[in-house]
Length: 99
Image (cartoon, rainbow, N blue to C red; front, side, top):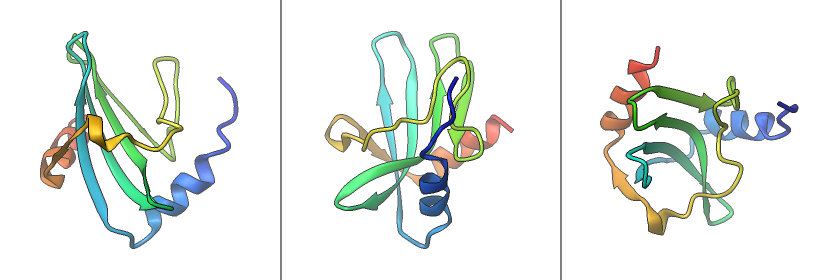
């Protein structure tokens, strides 16, 4: 793993008062990806990301834990056209399950 230079930017967005939106994406291996995003410069940037793999293991990424040996917080704006918007409470329930 290498130092994540996005950490301060993601922290700044996370601590901002900007509105949040929540998204879900599914992959071809039965996994689910959930994102909390903040809009900046017309694009949606993930500030928290929960991944549930096909074996139902949950991994979480945010500014305090941007990467590990299994994956990382996306470093690209979200392509929201490929995602489904979900309720914030649904995202929070999954996020809390990883604590």
